[in-house]
Amino acid sequence: MERHNGYRDECKGCGSNYQVSSSDIDRMLAAPIFSRSDVCVSDDEYNARLQVCRSCPRLLDGETCSACGCYVRVAAKLKSKSCPLPGGGLWPAVTSEAASGK
Ligand code: SF4
Image (cartoon, rainbow, N blue to C red):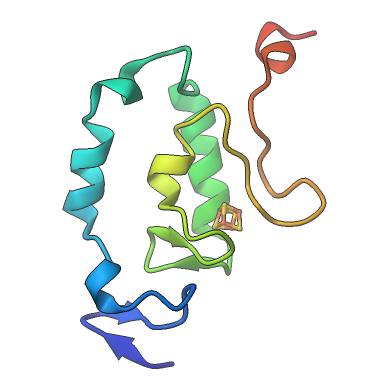
């Protein structure tokens, strides 16, 4: 597997110019929207999603999902997002019915 600047070169054809660092993702997650409970999942749900991603063979360099190109630490925060794998993926979106226990 070819590597550029420590990143694997197999995700959606993006070159190293498009790769972000872990600290770039930290800065994204500091945006006010990621503190909104109407937009984001609970910390428990977030950690559960990330635990699944961390054991998934589609995860590249601990940050990027090679199935959809998302940064998993960002995508897993959002209620509206789900794992993109076929058949419902490995973690679902949080619907209003699921959040209310219906
Ligand atoms: S979002 Fe799904 S396919 Fe992507 S790394 Fe996480 S578990 Fe794997």
